[in-house]
Image 1: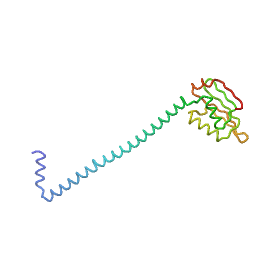
Image 2: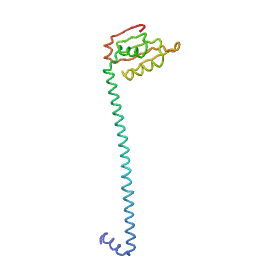
Image 3: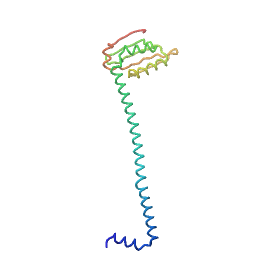
Image 4: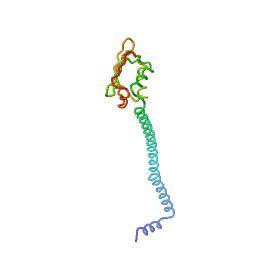
Length: 173
């Protein structure tokens, strides 16, 4: 006698009312297992996958934005006209009078400003960073007579130093 035949005999030995009750219990147990054993884990997996996808999509957008920013930075740095003359002209356009300047062979442009207000100075430095991808390596400021006296050094890209020449000086621009 095999197990299936024994199960059939046990089933037939039950009354009709017991068989209906057992069948209803098996159906409810199957529904419970289906719901909590299959559908709920699948729903959680779907929600996790959706969250992961949204996070990955946001990461892709952020990486693309950073790549575009990096490319713009490299473009500005490579061909953005960031030689000493361009920087000095941008200072003059910003209303900043450069009183001393020196460009050494390593590509460092040292600037001296005897009197400048903080607003135009910081606006010009922000524009240098944005337009030319250049910021000061060193910056020393003193407040004198309601204005700032500034000494700074800007590092120019290596290829730009050839255009500007070395050790340029001008007084009282």
